Each structure stands twice: as structure tokens, then as C-alpha cells.
Image (cartoon, rainbow, N blue to C red; front, side):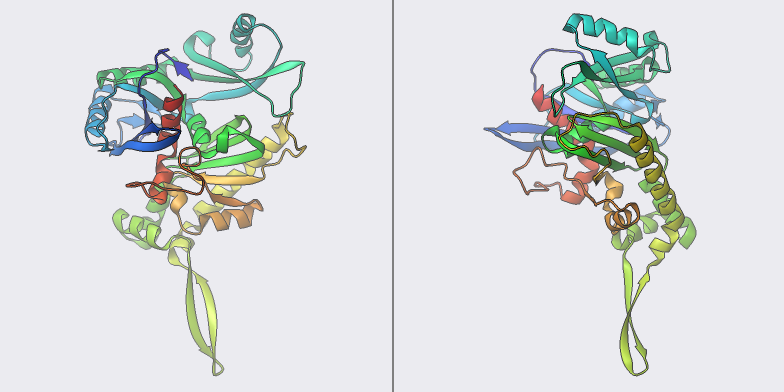
Length: 375
């Protein structure tokens, strides 16, 4: 995370992706948290392309418009924590000898040159020590995070042109894990899959930190486009059918030999999406295998290094039947993540004005808003 202020103002979260921005602000009421403001705004194609801002002025106008239209309480603060594009980020867990804080900061900058595929002077670099679940004495595990300056500077410029003051910028995967992982701690590896409109992010979280991240081009939007093309219908109708039927089964009753027989058939939506679903499953398997091979010792209470659960988020996670299909094919329990798990009382998954289904697309924004409360 890149920090710019040491103040304690009210802060909201702003999730900026290629095709939309989402806003979330939390408020403390006693010991409880509530959602005080939220909103979203579409971003026209071309203003941001694959995480790179192409038009700062247009993006700043859209941000201003989105801020005016938030639901709930009017936003009265200019302080923001904004997301940074996952596909442009470089994250790596490294091991460092134990040393003083000042020496560690200097050593990390020097050591980072061995891991980052760009000159250190061309990136913004951040790091944090990963506290172990099970204590060890001989070294630090350190999470390195780096993004190119040429990517980040336009985000800073756009935010400032919109009249905002960023107190921090955070990579999407870090915000997602803050939202979905209870108390940001787990004793076993969990895979987080964010099925967004334009791409899908894969994140392995272990102990107190994420460990691996990757992005693939499969997306909720691509599913809609495939349905539209295969069935010869408009994108609007394809999106409606995708939401209504998903990967559900058609149940028909047929008369055979004087008896009624229940016959289950896959629907047209499922059939249209088979190639894309096979591709998605294969890429997830490839990613899981990569993690399994490269998993380092993570100082957990359990000796198991394999992913034991998968949590889905993002708007694409609402595709009916997807958790069940992935669980069947991957042989790992798959469920929808709960982006309110660190916000609302236990068991609650939605709040007034923001249903659970809609909340899944606000996962990153809610994670950023949680970080804003900590600040």
C-alpha cells in the first residue's frame, strides 16, 4: 500500500476498474460498523484499457459524477483509498534475516531488485512483514508489492483532478482479501476468485497475507458476449438470460412406457458457455498446481499446503450453478464469499439498499472502505 498522509480523516473506498467505479464508505456506530454511503458509475470503454488510464480528464469527470450520486449519506470528505489494477501489480513473498526496522527498509529496496522485472527507480515499492501463525525466530517473511510509476501516476492525477486527496492506493487483491477473509487470518490456504466484468483475478491467501495473485482474461462480460453470439440474441437479452437461468438445469417430465419419468437436461445457457467454462476450470487448475509447487513454508498450524476452500466474488460470481460446477470439477469446496464478514454482525450478508448479490460486485470497494476505517 502506498500511503500519503498520516492524518485520521473520514475516508471512503473507491474501486476503479476498466468499465466501472464503485464507492463505499463505512461509519462506526459504537463498536459496530454500518454502510453510510455507496454508489457506482459506468466508465466508457477506452478511458481505461487493461488497467492503464488513457484519459485522465474524462475519468476525473466520471469520478465527480459518481460522488454526486451516492446513495445514503452525502460524501463530505475528500479523503479516499483507491484501488490499483491487479494485472499491473507485482507481488512476491521473500525471506529476510531479522534486523532493525531501519536496516530492513534499506535491505528490502536492495533485495527487491532481484525479484522485480523493472528498475526499482521506475516503480512504486511497498512492503510489509507477514506475522506468522506459528512463530519462528530466524527470519522475516516480507510481502513485496510493486507497480510501475507510469501506471500509478495517472491514477493520482485523475483523483486530484476530481478534487480528492488519496491517503493510500491499494492493489485490488489486498482489498478483496480484507473484505472476504474473517479477521484477515486463516490457518489454511484459501483461493479467492474475483469474477469481474473485464477479467478474473485469482488470489491465494494464507495465514495473515496473500501469497500469490494472477489475472486471466475470462470475464462476466465475455460470458454474456458468448451467449449473445451463440444464441443469436442481443447483449441485453443475453445478460438477462444469463442472470435468470445461469447454469441451471431444465427438468422435464416425459411419459415412457405408461410411466412418468423425470429427465434432467442442461439448459441452452450452460451449453453455450461450455468452452469458456472448460477454459476457466483449466486455468484455475493450472494456477492451483503452480501454487502447490511453489508454496513455501508458511508457518501454519497445519502441515497441509493445498488450497482447501475457494471463495467467489465479483459480479460474475452470481452466475447460478457456478459454485457447484467448480466444486465438482476442482474437487474443492466452492462457495460465494461474504464481503460483509468483517463489517456486519455474524450471519448477515446484506444491508439496506445493497443486496448480497449486488454486494459481491462491491467486494473491492468494501475492502478499501474497511482499510479507510483502520486509517
